[in-house]
Length: 147
Image (cartoon, rainbow, N blue to C red; front, side, top):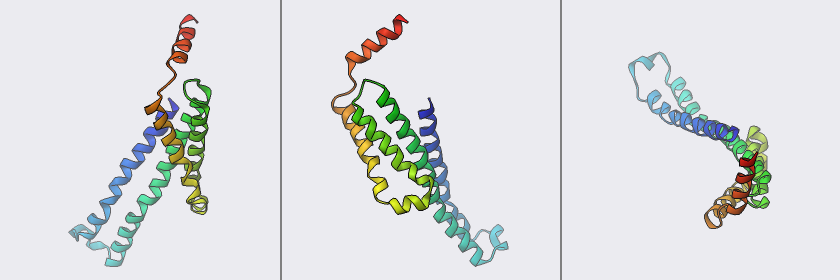
C-alpha cells in the first residue's frame, strides 16, 4: 500500500509541475492586469517558472525512489522473483533518493542515474520473459488459506 502511495505522489507531482510550463506564456503575453509589473519583473518571474519544473522533477524522483526501494524490499522478502532483481531495485531506489539533496545528486551525476535503469529494466525483462514462479505462488496462497 505504501508503495502505491509513493508512486501516486510522484505522478501527482509530475502532473502538477506540467502547469509551470504554461506560466511563462501567461506572464509574457502582455495581459492588462500584468501592467503593474515592470518588464524586468515579468521576465524574472518567467525565468523562475522555467526553472521550477527542474526542482519539481527532483521531488518526483524522490517519490519514485521510495517506490523502487519498497518494490525492491518486497521482492527480497518474496520468493516469486530472484533476489538479484530485488537488490537491483533497492539500488535503483537509493540512486533516485540521492535527489533528496540536489548538491549531492549533481556531484554523483551520472553515477546515481545508472542503478535506476538497471533495476527497472531487470524487473521489466524478468516479468516479461519469465514471469512469477507460479508454483511458489500457489504454495504460499494455499498456506495462507489454511491459516
